Image 1 (cartoon, one colour):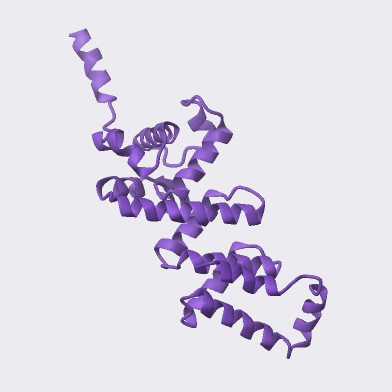
Image 2: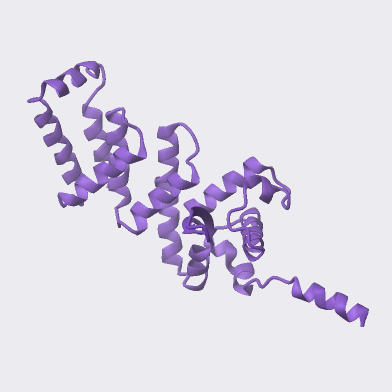
Length: 234
């Protein structure tokens, strides 16, 4: 009887893992380290910890906390993981990891969706990290995913907005978001239309003394690069 109870305790501590995750994870563009980290997140969630730190995850993996942070960013970039906010019992907003994007892709996987996700990852996220000169935070990656998924912004326009922010020396996500929202409000859907908006913005700036002073400060910079950058996109 004691042995039965011991085995029952072991069974009660089991965790359900979809077989399809173990057979198809490579089709989703994941490696073994990413798979193991997702399994640990799944375990933490089952135990009530919805937002484990990289240090907590590293205790159960053979990688450092810094590598855990990198893998988390990679999973968010691949749209297999996202950060959500929810209210606890005290009505306080807290963050948590959601595996819903993973399950959605796993059970509705098509090769075309994978190719599109890879194109976004290869073209968008490294470009942002290059311009910012550092790895993106999970929240910044989630911000880009919102532009792509929820707001249906094209990768070309996002890159154009990023380069406009670089040109204007206002390299922050709020400024880029304002550019994208303004373009959407004005019905800008192509890079050519964005280029025209940039031209009109500069022409309007010539009538403002304040903007003239700002232009004088930036006169050593080649403004034509803005248009060259946009022409590179298709």
